Length: 374
Length: 247
Image 1: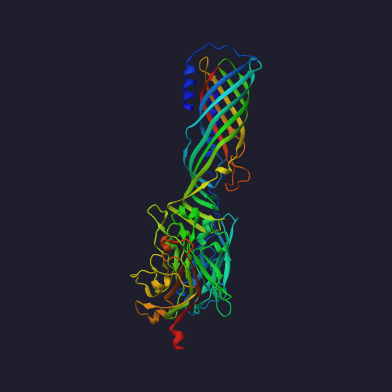
Image 2: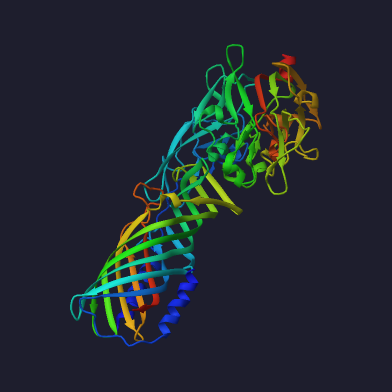
């Protein structure tokens, strides 16, 4: 009889049906993969993020008639089309639609010559983005001149941020009726532990944070600088308050946190002026403080004493130590960039520190040569 | 315990006793053992699955007892109780695949493009109620519905070599490369009660020794209907091959 054959045939049908791979679905993603303006207009490579593109242009370029071009996820379309001439006196929006037509993403494209970078930072303005604070600064007219970066976008992935104040970087009361930025070293929970990155120091910096590589190469995920700087910084001053967490921990060989008896956590704050070259448009966690980084021009940094616990709010003033001379021509052309970085755990990059260490920073001010020669 | 039963069944089967014609109006009892080969699969495969890179059906044992009652020379009714394992392990390459990584109270959901490793294991008590048709002394078939109650359910695995778009395809991109893996576990989302249809055939190799084949075809999604992360339904389809001792 054929009954076993029938059963076998039925199973075979099933297997065949399962084995049939359907035609590949159309792409659902709608990313700007690369963006361009004519090369001679740009001062830096374009900065492309998940929903934003920043063109940093040379001083004096007419921003009212620019026609950026974009390369998108295969099959995706952009409106207005790539190459359309638009007035970039204010940021312009573009909508990218995925190949399958189901998804749309709105990009803000801004053109920035960064001629008037704010030098006073009072951390009074922040937007709530994906559940966390994102600090920004404005000029006298209320235009956004700087958006501070932090590792908050990666902390979203840990699921530990139930309220904005649970994140490593958040807004707090400065005790004088306005706000400051607070940085707290956090546990990243089970998700972070899985990637052997069990803590996240609170940090804030001028630059950008690349979540794409943060899980695998965290040091390269924090990218510092990015905007041209046209002045000669001499001092960085401000107020801060620091309370180290109770138990200092570091990663052991197995990627687990281990208590280090006797160690007390330290904070850090520094600023680096560097020359932008095609090989190094941004600094990152691997090279921002390297003694032998040839691009670094000047560094201002907290002394070891300043990194300890403070008795309440404390004023500080640190000076930029120049490693080499500035080239006035390059300064004029916007070939230098600056970053300021603050962190609640000095070794947070290497996942060492004390959970709960909290640094608050307020009223940062960069004093430049132009302030003294006016 | 399982192996012992297996051996006992085999030994019993060797003891050849004369067996009468159809025991019309009486109960006939049978014990049997077998192996389940198959998997839990969407039908047909959704387009998000780009390539099945590995499939391991596992060694899934089953042990059962069956009682049949014949009303006449041909027709009867059978009720069985079967303890069985259903399982599989697969590796697949997917594109834009609904995924939620859960770890303690941390969860990240989104669309995954890359590699997915899945392991499915279910230990069940199945109760088929089937109409039996007997052709002759050696051959009979049966067909009917079954329900299966899971005593242990596992559906878990990990994703690697790809990226997660957080939330939806427009979300932030988190890349997992090299050794980076993100586990997931949907075990709690599996149904406890499944049902489906069973088609079986029995051949009497000797007076008491039977050879059996049963195809069980699940008709409800292995996941609870409230579970939306995996966007398509999956059905358990298994062929059970084994032998039994008919008293």
